[in-house]
Length: 112
Length: 238
Image (cartoon, rainbow over all chains, first blue to last red):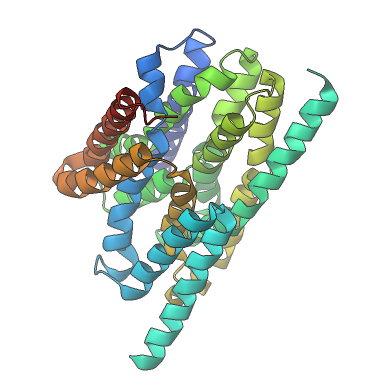
């Protein structure tokens, strides 16, 4: 890494300020003015519109394996999705995902 | 609004936020480890976690800096990763927009994926909550996570490279996101939006600066909204 300390701090502070302004943008500046129905209808889908697209590459091409698809991580993702969808319980889904991940890593390690 | 009901909303927020410690703890620790290994000192590593509070953006920034990207590109990529927060901010307006300015400043600082998702679910479930109670719940949901985020970043920075990669801490992030996502798929409109999001994100992955994700998100939102309208016209939307 070539960056010196003052450059590093410029980057950190700039991202910090930028992130705050992004978060503050609507809830801070627009305040309690009413948003039109069509805007609300689109915003209802923000979590299911952003999260799957963000996760898909991380599941299919995990950086930790150098971008190679990894069976243990695929199984863990499948377990988290299935249990979360069936139980509607976030914590159960996290446990299912992490449990499956360690079980699969351990098993595949023994087999491999 | 009485302070008693706000206090109970705050505690309910804390209770609902607690499970995410299981994710925030390994994730923040991992960030501390990765940033330290990349050559940042403890103060700089803490600077990321205190000023940015966004794991994905922090990792993106560190990765870009290790790759010696120009300063402006590093900033642009990290902010692009955090752009989804603008949508969260907009989605919170109907619930929190009438809160006092100082509260909106505070809750903007602690707005991240998990407490956003928890809060919107709660507000949909209990529309009778007052604005004060909604703010209290939101801040409550952030309360256990923020100190853990700071503290475990510090632990990670101190522990450095002691944690072997076999522990696969890298996968805590995708699992958290999937665990938030799966229960949120309640209708055909949600399901189709999620499918379009994945497909478009993979198709447009070649676009620079994480723009592919933004394109995918916009297409997916349109898909959800149009599906909802279509079901409504057929009288199948409740």
